Length: 106
Image 1 (tube, rainbow, N blue to C red):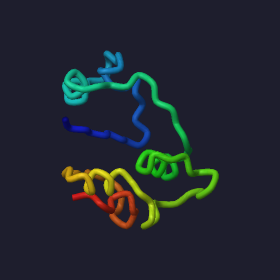
Image 2: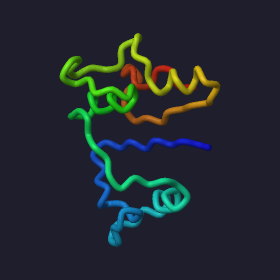
Image 3: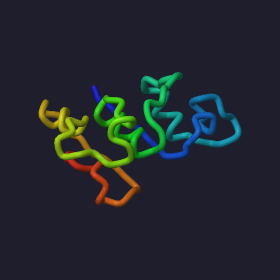
């Protein structure tokens, strides 16, 4: 089984064909969605972006306690967990490498 997380800042789901949009063409997302599990409901733990990413990477709701900031070295995040269990992982990112959300990926 392969797991792919697609996280795109400011992409609205109603702008994708796989969620019913018929006026913006998204053939690659639509093809991937046809072969995948697509979630209809998602709930935001923290807001804005960086705290929300930290929630997703660690599986913990942390914004009220840690505020705005990247992952800390002691955080057990998804990259560390999958690597420790022998899986290959990678990240494709558009933000600068100094942010710690890219640490731990092959």
